[in-house]
Image 1 (spheres, rainbow, N blue to C red):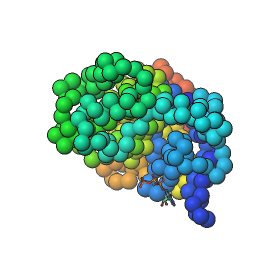
Image 2 (image 1 turned 90 degrees about the horizontal axis):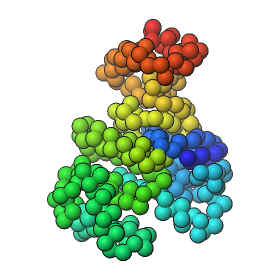
Image 3 (image 1 turned 120 degrees about the vertical axis):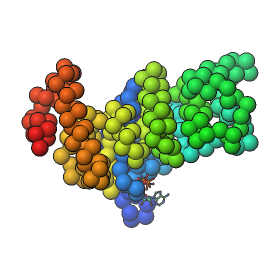
Length: 280
Ligand SMILES: Nc1ncnc2c1ncn2[C@@H]1O[C@H](COP(=O)(O)OP(=O)(O)OP(=O)(O)O)[C@@H](O)[C@H]1O
């Protein structure tokens, strides 16, 4: 679990992150969403130590990132996997060499063990036959899978994914989302996904933090998001008439699910908002 506590960050006199607190839960896909310029990347960079917040704390499993000594911080960094926008593969290396790279940097295992681990993760992302190919020879979706394989090869406790669906068609995006979700559940990873993609929000958003102009405007799950009373959030997620129609359909579908799902009892019993919204 990662706790973000009262993080503030300014550049010059411009406040970019304005007192944000939130929790990124273990074994869950935690999504950070918001319009362009709302501060998603800056907040994420504060979380992984690429920016120093002006105030506030980031706690990894209860330990303050800012207060760690260098050795401890180095160890933590090895538990963080990163899937970069555009996959960021090394063009001159084969798929296998790309995935091997973090092991060569950080692992003391011999070549045979490293190779076995590379084979394992490539099989896990369903790329058994791509070892010797170069990035230029594979599709965008495959590159993403290689990026995912590389980000999980060290078995990270925390996985950061920056716009994992950028540049992918909707069907491939779904496959990638499903893979991220499965890996998160399988290894109890604390996964953080920065995204604009509303499909991802609905498909994998176990926990969603919505930023608006550097502040946290809303936090909740994909089951709750369509019932949000935040006008700012509603404008963001239902930006078109088409999506508004989809929202209405989704609400009906949710109602069916809620009626059939005992786990949703709490939601049904919570102060009127759910039914109020369903009847609108
Ligand atoms: N190094 C920096 N120096 C000065 N300003 C910065 C720096 N990095 C980001 N900013 C500013 O912080 C604000 C938030 O940027 P950020 O990249 O976090 O937005 P974002 O929500 O990730 O947007 P996008 O969805 O377009 O990636 C922007 O106004 C940006 O110009």
